[in-house]
Length: 126
Image 1 (spheres, one colour):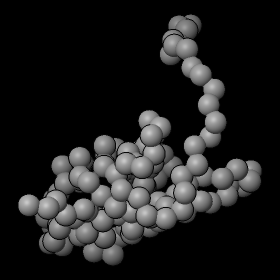
Image 2 (tube, rainbow, N blue to C red):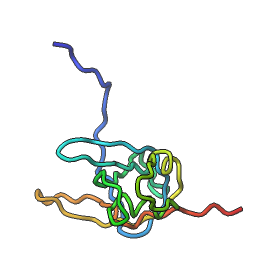
Image 3 (cartoon, helix red, strand yellow):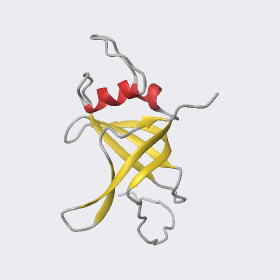
Image 4 (cartoon, rainbow, N blue to C red):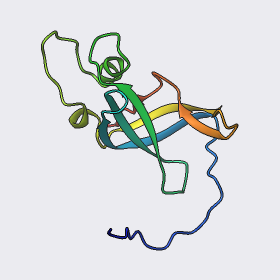
């Protein structure tokens, strides 16, 4: 059996992301298959110095009313039945604004969650 090597890690205090408005950049777009097909959008926050990313998940279903469809429409895509798009090409490296809220997990630990449908592009000034 091969031993995994990751290097040395340092214990740190949990990072608290305050409720409210934030800005950031979409660093990458991925997907997962289990337990369902999800498109995952990873966001680096501008106002947090720590090297962390928040994840925003959407079921991988593209309709006018789906979570992923609403996100694509917010970024300027138009619904056109049968048309194919690549969400990563549309979203990656985009500057955005969004809202977060603190939630409690079943084990009573708190975590920060991006509010559904709050991700919007920041218009670049010309």
